[in-house]
Structures are given as structure tokens and as C-alpha cells.
Amino acid sequence: MTTATLPLRKPATAAWLAVLPIWHLVVALAAAATGVILLPRLSEGLLLVPVVGLLAVAGLSAAAVPYIRRRNHRGRVLSLAVNYLGFLACAVGLLHLMGAFTGIDDLARRFGRGLPFLLLAFLGYLVQAYADHFEYYPKRQRRVQEAGKGIILVGLALFFVAIVNWPGLPALALKLLQPAHLALLALAVLFAAMFWGMWRQPTAEAMHVNNARAETLSGLLFLSPNFLGFLLFFAGPLLLSLYTSFTNWDAFGTRDWVGLDNYARLLNLTVARLSSPTQLAAEVIDVKVYDELARFTLFGRSYVVGAEDKLFWISLRNTVVFCLIAVPLSVIPALFLSNILNSRLPGMKFFRAVYFIPSVAAVVGVSLIWQWMYNSAVGWINYGITVGINLLNGAFGLDIADPKIRWLSSADTALLAVAVMVAWQTMGFNTVLFLAGLQNIPTVLYEAATVDGADAAGRFRHITLPLLAPTTVFVVTTTLIQAFQVFEPIFIMTNPPGGPNNATLSMVLYLYQNGFQRFRQGYASAIAWVLFLAIFVVTLIQFRRQRGGVAYEA
Image (cartoon, rainbow, N blue to C red; front, side, top):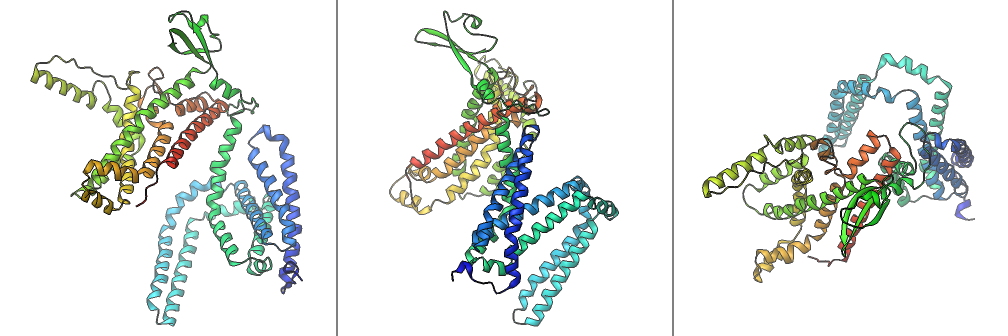
């Protein structure tokens, strides 16, 4: 007799395992039928994710049947997954139909009333913890633990009494009596019962589940809220945006499938030869389709470049230039500053906190302060330049003219001004990362290098930089990703956002303008995916460079 056909000692467990295959067949058929019914309506709304979810549940539920019949542990895993997801779906659907989510604000207002009772429950936890002091007095220890549990239960009960909206319970009960609500409640109870029956220890033993598999399932159950949140609020919208990028959706009507038209319009360029550098672009390219993007001369011949979406290429150029300015300004000073802060001089802890403060400050507040500082008439930066020039002119008899730089209103300096502000705010965080990497370098290496006659520059070049390479790659990569996604400083500091003359128009800002001002969600999604591919390629290059580097070991 094989282990798969061993008789079960408990009839209840045997009956349960006989019912579960039938239950999973019913779930598989119901989920598949619901998904097939919704398939023709995919173009009418956001049905792609629920349809895919229903078909996945149907497949998992059907796959669990033969494993459960053979009492294989894989059947337990699939059964637990299907019943867990089914219970969550029914519970969330019931809460939605009951209007529970619309009452969250009201619950938040009443939550403060229950805080004292939560503190009472925490006091009970402390009493339970204090019971460990009576290790050699078991009876007293048990009494203290029971007292702590009682305090916790009383505190939690009073907490729920305080936050529940008692006058609204009758109306809630009437809503629950509606047929659709009762059906969802019954399904949630059934899914929960099937989950509990499969989770029980006798059933786990019958399914040949060892301790390692049981611990793995327990860990996955604890991780499931975070994982499901990732799927629902990140992976799901990400896939939805990919689908939307192939449509012409305007955020209100239906989605019409246009394929790669959005991407073609974004990337479509044309190059035409000019008879002279000053020839009009309209004479060589179709200006109804293309706008002049740039001119260049190669081997004595002039050319004009036309773009179907000129603003996209301008935003791409601005983003790349912004990265080339902001990333070095926020990484290189942070590297040297971290070496200074790594010393044991008095007051270093204070300066570490001071340099980190800009990183935790609100972007809006910092942007408004720098906008005022950049003001060409009353800003402190121009005031400092004016004072400095007057001192030089008075001391040395020079005749230097005050430039009175229009930092944010000139196309020549606006992008530089924003990049300097972003680098200033990011530098403190990068300094902390470099500082953490420096503190992991063994001091014996520096001592040995000093004994060998290496000066400070030599130690920095041959010890600090190589051993700090992984941290440097991480800092550069994260800073580069943040620079590619720059939006808030440009939106706040420039007027109009992206100005002057689109000199500060970034890709994320252009995405925002298309998606939320012109309501071209499909086109904005295409821009988002082009930006994602650009960030992915740059990040991949960074990590490949790190792998190709020389590995140093302490």
C-alpha cells in the first residue's frame, strides 16, 4: 500500500478531503464561466485585470483537484491559495456593496476615541511581559499572564465599542439582508471554512506536509498582504498602463486599439538635406506632419531634422541634460563630504544631521524657497553677486558689469538653476549612503597603507574608491533614476511649468501635460513606457559595469 492511498484515521478528515475536490471543481467552473461572460465587455471598461484573475483562479482550482485526490501537498498549496483569494475577493466585494469604504473618513474621526483603550491593551501586553520576572514562581507567573490577557481583551473590546457607529448598525443590517449581499457573505464563509479545513493540522498530516513545507506556507501567508498589495496597486496598474499605451483612451470614453501608433508618433523622425544652412525647412520636409527639431552640418553639407512630436524630443533632451548636470553635482560633492564627515573630529554628528536635513524637507517648500532666492530682482543669489562685483570694482578699480541673471526666466539658465537646487537637496542623502559605505571599510587597510608610505590621496585612490565601488554604483543609479523622473521642482519653480520656451520641459512633466491636462491617457502611457525603457537601459548598463569591475575583498 503506497503512502498516497493510506487510510485516514479520522473520518472527518477523510470526508473533508472527499468534499474539497468537488468544491474546487465548482469554483473552477464558476470562475471560468464568469471570466468568459466578461470577455466580450473588455473594451467597455477596466475588466482586463478581473478577467485575468478569474481565469487564473479557475486554472488553479482545477489543477488542485487531482493533487488533492492523490493527497499530494501541492494540492494543499493550490487549495489554500484559491480559498484565500476567494475569501478576500468576496469580503472586499461585500464591504464595497455595503458602503464600508465610504465610511472610512467617519471611522478615522472616531478612531481617536478608542486610543485610550488601545493604550490599555498595550498596558496588558506590558503586564504579560512582566510575568517573565516570576520564572521561578510558576503559579504567580500564570496569574500575571492571565491578568495581562484579561487587560488586553478588555482594552480591545472597549476600543471597538468606542469606534463603532452604533446608530448606523440597523441600516447596515438592512443592507446585509439584500440577496446579493447575503450571497457574497455565504461565499466568503464557505471560502473561509474550506481554507480553515485545509489549514488544520490533521488535514496537513493527511496531505503529507512536513515541517519545512508548513513553515514555508506560514511565511507566505504572512507575506501575502504585501504581495497582494504589490499586485493590485503596482503590477496591475503597470500592466494596465501598458495596455492603455496601445489605445487612444481619453480617460472618459472607450479605448480604441491603435497598436503602435502612439509609439510611432513619439519616435518618428525625418532627416532632409538643405541646399544652404538658411534654407526653410518647409521646402524639404512636410511641415504638416513634421516640425523642425534641429539643424546640423556634416562634411560641409547641411541637414534639418524633423520630428512628428517635437516636444517629446525636447523633453528627452532636457531630461538627459538635467541628468548630466544634477547627478555629478549630487554625487561627487557627497563623496568628498562623506570622507570629511567620517573623521572623528568634534561636532561631526551635528554636521551629519545638518547635511541630511534638506533630504527630508518637503520638495514644495524647498522649491518655493529656491524660487525666491533665484528671483532676479529681490533674490539673495543675485544680491550676493551684486555685492561681490561692487567689492571687486571698488577694491581693484575694475569695471565689471552686474549681469543681473534671470535664473528661472531665461532659457539659458533655467534648467541649470533647477538642477542645482535638486543636487543640493539630494546631496545629503547620498552623503549618508557614502558614509555608511566608508564605515564598512576596515581601518586596518588604511593603517597598513600609512605604514607603507601612502599619503591621503593615495589611500583615497587605492583603498577608498575601489572598496566603495558597490556603494558608488548604487548611489549613481538611484540618483540617475530620480533625475530621470524629475517633476515637482520644475512644475513649481518655472512659470509656466516647463518654460521658458520649453527649456525645462522634462519627460515626466510632458507625460503629466498629456495625461492630465490634455486627457490623452493612451499617449501619456506610451511616454511613460519610453521613459521606463530609458531608465531600465541606463540601470542595466550601470550594473553590467559593476559586474565587469575588479572585485576587492577586505
